[in-house]
Image 1 (spheres, rainbow over the protein chains, first blue to last red):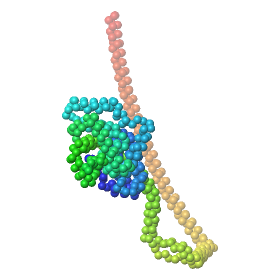
Image 2: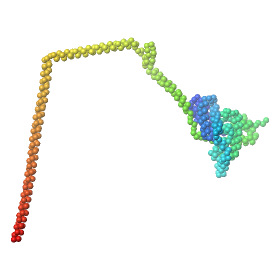
Image 3: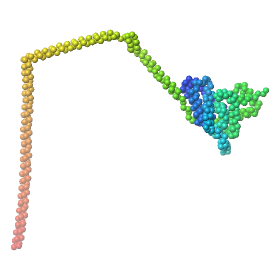
Image 4: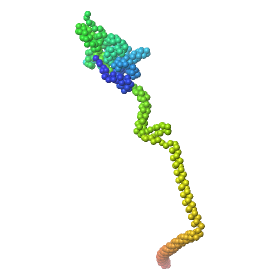
Length: 206
Length: 258
């Protein structure tokens, strides 16, 4: 559905950067920083943490790029670094704080969701969900998924990795990736149905 | 046995990551099982819905990693500088034919064709010859000076002993001096007379003007005296007239009383 172009010059840049070309390295960072940031942002739903992971990922990348054997596997390799930092961040946060997205199942939020949906439709039936509202709801929906499912969904749906690449990035089997995707999609479907977000409600926005 | 795709195969189909023959197999199965198709389609719809979650813009782009570049350049820079300097020196050395030769006879440094220098003995010889030449020249010059001075001294002495010459010179000198004094006196005399004449003329002129002025003063005084006298005379006449009148009046009044 959403296919991210694997930039054609990525392999070339990786090769140059591996040999110590600083311009190529900066170019790589420029190309990939938005992707990694969005990956981490969807995972945490938090700007600071996403930024933190992005910084760390690219620092680690520039340090360890010379150890990358095959330029073709740069993408999964990069996402592996990013996902490791995501896990590390979660562990650190768990030690001291409640994650922001944990609050999603609270009654207030449920109330908000139903309010926003019903109000809108009552007042203006022709106007469906606003973009920002939909975004917020999807953010919350993602946050309800268990960590490992959430990561697989983000890599597949938003980052456009192949199933093989996800397996490589997360160091799990392809079948595990597939079953995680299956259960994740099932849970999301259930949740969206519950919130009454369907093809019809977002129809006008598409 | 009837084919039934696994969960994993369905997911691969959903994401279009299957081989062509597998896809065909699954499509056959889905056509036969509308329920399974519906399930798959609802998953597809879910994918479409969550696909609405757009990318966020990065609030601030990453700071690029430049330091490594700088460090590397700093490290190599000094070597590059040294290499460039050496290259420059070599190039100009070659162009100008700069040579350094170290042989038994010593160290030679030079541009272009290097001429071997003189040996120590040759140099010593050169210096000696030069010194002899200089000494000769100095001696000759000194001798010549001495001779000429002696000659002049002798002539001077000879002329001093000749009495006649001395006297003549003395007379000449005396006459010239007298001449000078007399001209000086003459010039002084002429001047003196001229000045005297001028003084006398000036004096007589002064006397003349003073006399005329005195005369004028006297004339004025006389005029003033004359005027005063006339006035006095008139006053007296007036007074006499008044008096006679008064006398007449008194005489008339006296005669009337009588």
